[in-house]
Length: 69
Image (tube, rainbow, N blue to C red; front, side, top):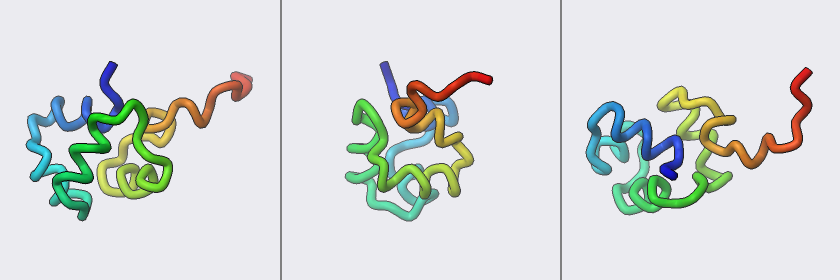
């Protein structure tokens, strides 16, 4: 299953280089983050701020066990 960053890239038909320019990272780093099972915790804030992808989508594992009240 693709992570939320890779889904975003595909949805908007962006290359890794395009996405890297949008977030201020290099292409290799963005490609690595797109291919990872989960976006690295240290990069979540940047992707959220630049692309408005919800943190919960970028790292759902950080919210496991959260009450649904």
